[in-house]
Length: 275
View (cartoon, rainbow, N blue to C red):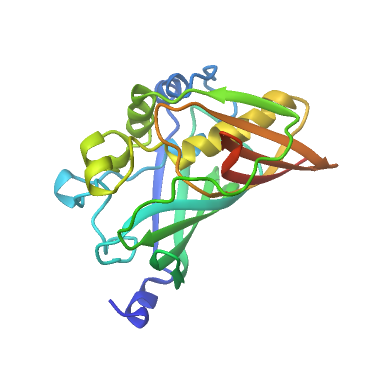
């Protein structure tokens, strides 16, 4: 499909309204090995990724387990889809046990030449509302790359951290996170597909799950701080079951640098603002 045809997807919009079920929140918490919040409490940061999902039937999925190309997101030939990163502003918390709505809009479509071939970048804006009040504003970066061996070796050294937590991903953890987010992408739970079709040495840890652990490492280390914004980008995949670290440092008042690292090199890098 030509670049001109792809531009017809700009401005395309969809929405999803959902009751934030305490039962589902419990499943998210247990999938992340986190404390279980109750009805009436604030939804933990980034847990909205396991909510507001409009599910599709099996016949509407592609061979990779993602929705078929050309629905809400534009078609991208036979390229592999990845969640490359995003930027979020936390305006006010979503409350568990109440109804909320996500409104999504395609904001940008750009094609670039990468070291492994052509890359198609799609930016989607997600806005999360409760009682007609904007609670979270997010921009999500999705990249479609031509099939090529994935980059597995880190090139950016991890900085000196002020805090650090070890995460030990297991196939059960990945399966559960796929389940609570209704993510059918087979690289996270189908070992033969991940290794034989997409060229990974094992199951791939979800980028959003890594980002969730990265952000919550800041909260654990700084319980008196209030997160205002979070921006992250993936640098390379992490493969199950090798442990990795989520770390960070406060660089100046109101601003922190966070990352996920393995063997001394970064796999995901983030910036966070707080007050």
